[in-house]
Amino acid sequence: MKAKQQLRSGIFYHDRHVHSIEYHDVSESCSHCIVRCLVIPSIPTSNQKKNPDHRVWVIMSNVTGNVHSADCNC
Image 1 (tube, one colour):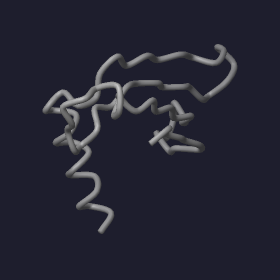
Image 2 (cartoon, helix red, strand yellow; image 1 turned 45 degrees about the vertical axis):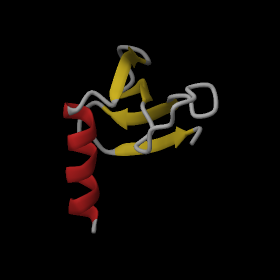
Image 3 (cartoon, helix red, strand yellow; image 1 turned 30 degrees about the vertical axis):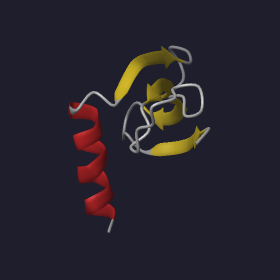
């Protein structure tokens, strides 16, 4: 199940559903970073105001790549 979700997320990225990616190092002494982006919904609608892009953020380790916290407004 997890491999299927990872494959699907890779397809969304390559199809440019993920955009406006921002990266922020918390500090030089901290081993974590924050990544924010916008994601186009997987089910398109004709009215952009009713279904705007989702705002996603992730706090992750710079060393291991493990995700410590994440959220989406979807």
